[in-house]
Image 1: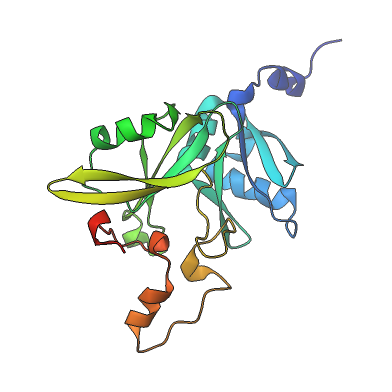
Image 2 (image 1 turned 30 degrees about the horizontal axis):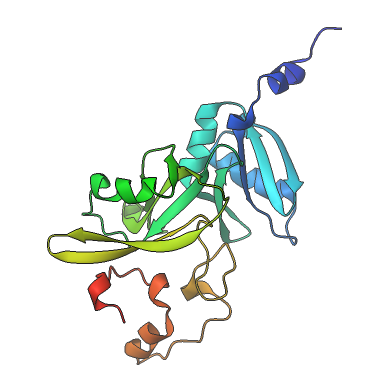
Length: 223
């Protein structure tokens, strides 16, 4: 019996073609497929399924897989959901509070202590909706690391640069809320966050956990 095109395509797939993301119970797998198809061409999505509260995709080429991971995530139901490779190929690690003037050679020794680095560091866009502002980057970056004896972790390390020490936070969970710890949103958009006073920006800043702030804070200044 001659193999069908779909069978031939499936036979060529490996774990390197797979990516995954968190899947909300209230949304269908089709909603996630539609979102992924906006990042890569619809024809690049070969297979998809819900597995243990995750949406798992197999894409047509490794180039499409790299594009999906470098994109950072997909927007599903108005929520940003991080995308990462499936286990065994490394875990996406997100760095926050990382000022743009810190060079890679300063970070690499600290990152190598977490595991084996499998990708270059890529910068994460700020996410402005205004087309004229979409080029603006955030103080976040990401890379893929094969972690040592674990699949997830979070913490921080300090980097000295020009007589100042900066605390850089890292997490394998991608974009998540430092308040309620749920994935898919940040503190300022968290349903549990207190409503900020209209005329009291100081109290608003005080309500935000230090790790969630986008302001770069030297480690020496933190309480």
